[in-house]
Length: 323
Image 1: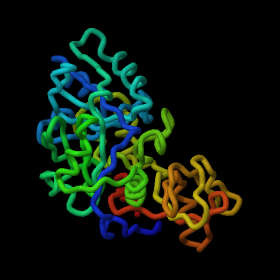
Image 2 (image 1 turned 90 degrees about the vertical axis):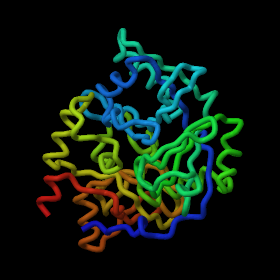
Image 3 (image 1 turned 135 degrees about the vertical axis):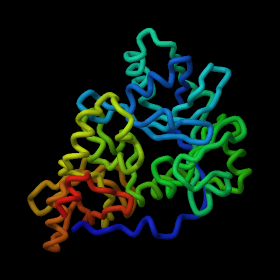
């Protein structure tokens, strides 16, 4: 069996926050905005309210990853938007293009409001309480001229804040959180084994269950149809996952993304994002379990890596039933 990680029960890092320059904000408005999203994204938009934010995916018709994002209800009068989407900034134009293909003549507006809003991640012990948020994933509230919410994927990730660039730092600092760095935020994320957009999820290649995105609350299996739903549901119920995106402890120099992970001469997977000591890799389960069973080592470049299974990771129904 793959080793179980103790990361979830380990002490939380010191409280802090970091503005995340790789994130942008898409404003979505119009009378048909929620209906459009409900028909195409993986989560149930009916759950979205002033008190609840959600995490969701836009998949290809073949069920492969295209975009992931956070959705928060917030009325931005300047853009006429009623929803704010925390998205990957570099790929925001592609997301608008894809959503435009689906909206046709629907009353939906799509506006890049990244000049009006920045995104920050707040993390560490007691962050939700300092921001007057509930501990459950997705708890949300208006914060100054923006919105704050407990990370919908995993409460241990802390909170996310969408607010004007000129005031976001002062707003969060006013809650008693000191400024930190994106590197510290990234290390915390990696220690929990949570992927970060297209750094870890290959566009039009990654299947969401290979990354455990259903366990991170990105998929609602009861909501009905959405783009890519058929294959995603079939994979879930049949449990046909052979590869996993998993955290790895790194002993040695940090491997670059794309570095093959080897079990002897066998290619067991490849590295994705990493910092000193910890990273994420897409690994074949049979090879990881072989390494655990035999005591063999996994290598990535000049480094030795050891795969772990975070406590939040759940196995597909059929796979779990076979154990």
